[in-house]
View (cartoon, helix red, strand yellow):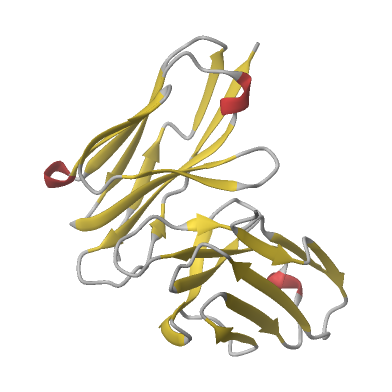
Length: 112
Length: 110
């Protein structure tokens, strides 16, 4: 009965490769997010989708492309991976409009 | 942009002690949440508390929005309370965009 799940949990890859992270929530929420946590534990929002519509798009390189096939899923595709992309990526979900956000377990991405 | 400052940055306690973590923010907010990131990296939502006081077991939180701060109280701390505590706020007029503070790292020893 996992609420917000992400796959994979760990991702190790070479520079220049393309990779995807998947996220699913079974909470019935209509809004989903991607956050990046750097090595100093700082958390920053990257994207937000509401009912499959992009509503927040922070200053993120266009190598990062989110896709929401339905409101229960939000995937993150990263092209041409760089060393600086190494981080933990968290997916989260909530009901729209100032509601509590619930986070997935995170995906630790290491770019070699 | 809005600044979110947490204090203290680090806190070391012995089991059974009480503690207060503080979150100051530089602008009006209409959403404030506290999270606990455990040593395994999982982020757990503790409170959604844009104003007022809430309690959940040994934890309680108070937000005074007019004075731009929030407090998280941990009573009778346990080793399982160890981890990083984050405060996150959403500015008025923004939409669901949480800005996270830098966190307070708590270590509880037996």
